Amino acid sequence: MQENKIIKLTVRDVRFPTSLEQHGSDAMHTDPDYSVAYVVLETDSDAALKGYGLTFTVGRGTEIVVCAVKALSTLVVGKTLKEIVSDFRGFYRLLSSDGQMRWVGPEKGVIQLATAAILNAVWDLWARVEGKVRNKPLKTNTFECAYMIAIKIQNEAILLKVAKKGQKNREEQMLKEGYPAYTTSCAWLGYTDQQLTQLCSEALAQGWTKFKVKVGADLQDDIRRCSLIRKLIGPNNTLMIDANQRWDVNEAITWVTKLAEFHPLWIEEPTCPDDVLGHASISKALAPLGIGVATGEQCHNRVMFKQFLQAAALQFVQIDSCRVGSVNENLAIILMAAKFNVPVCPHAGGVGLCELVQHLILFDYISVSASLNNRMCEYVDHLHEHFKSPTIIRNAHYIPPKDPGYSCEMLEESVQKHQYPDGEVWRAIEQQGKQ
Ligand SMILES: C[C@H](O)[C@@H](O)[C@@H](O)[C@H](O)C(=O)O
Ligand SMILES: [Mg+2]
Image 1 (cartoon, rainbow, N blue to C red):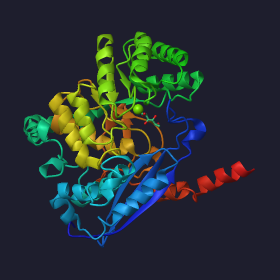
Image 2: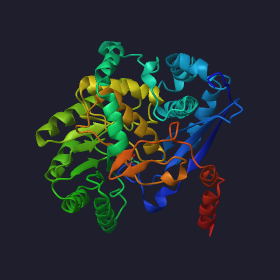
Image 3: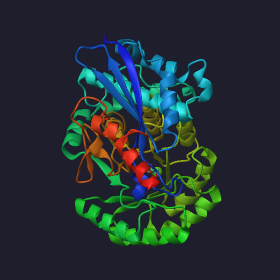
Image 4: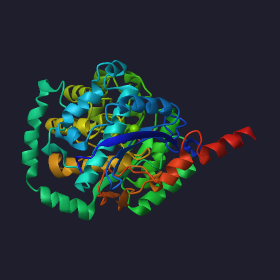
């Protein structure tokens, strides 16, 4: 089926009105409507073979990503899967380095999100054709290594040979126990203390042991909320805090020092996501307090991650399945993290991010890092019901998916209802606004 040709790409703007209840709110994004640019690749196969991909956004602006996907679509339509995967690195570069479109990136911003949506769909298609659940990408020349020569990333594939030992056992362990997860669902910034208490108590009862709290807007609020959560979860469970880029460098250090009594494992996105040296200063200042720096959900490509790692500017690598160029680029980041011995703790949540990133973190554990030390994958309990093969969580662990593909096919009914601006959900909201 690799001979089948991609004959059509459709892309739709699908939005969920999560801001109405403050789900997903943080110090920077106060009213997110969790959304996706949803891509479907159609092929000329009789078996109605399709590939499904997406990139995550938070509402307004999704229409711009949709435009960028349309602009890139001419590079995909007309190709066979075989042409793509026999030189996948070449295909990645075709998308990322088109002689004219590269100007509107390169490899960052909207065009990068669009690249991710398309490549996620191609990876899904490939896995479906092969009948595989988890992709086995490193057998081929898939990962993007341009600008990586200085740290010899290409040689890092050697690491994989090392990690081959025990691979089968790790796979069986994952199928049985799953991959450890933490939850962000209890403590969005816009939630009341009452909500926070209720959600946290429920999560504890369900077996959650690691919790992330949004901070960064008001110090007194942060002290009150962190103290409340720490009391609820006790001294032995894990707490992380996330400021979503709200502070300047010195402010981050002072603010987090005041929250140190709650023993957070990490401070996430303390400052501008592009400020590598700023993160390095924060890391250095907070190390004596036992607090690490985590970042990555807005780290737009592998070259940024390279610098963060080289500058010892982060202690937790938060890969994201949609922010960078799909599996191809995330593989390079996973390999670099292994080389620098920094744990990968993916960013997830949103719409479809858990569904996608579980494949990457399982791959990291089984084939690359071979370690669970200081590692966990984010989980957020929203919107999974809109997917054909939603993530399965058991006892605060991701259970490996069973259906072939990259797990981000959405239910057509959900897509139609939530399409923006014409889906019935959005028409009803508009109607209410007019009343
Ligand atoms: C706007 C979003 O909900 C973010 O707050 C979210 O991705 C967050 O940073 C996270 O780490 O889960
Ligand atoms: Mg975050």
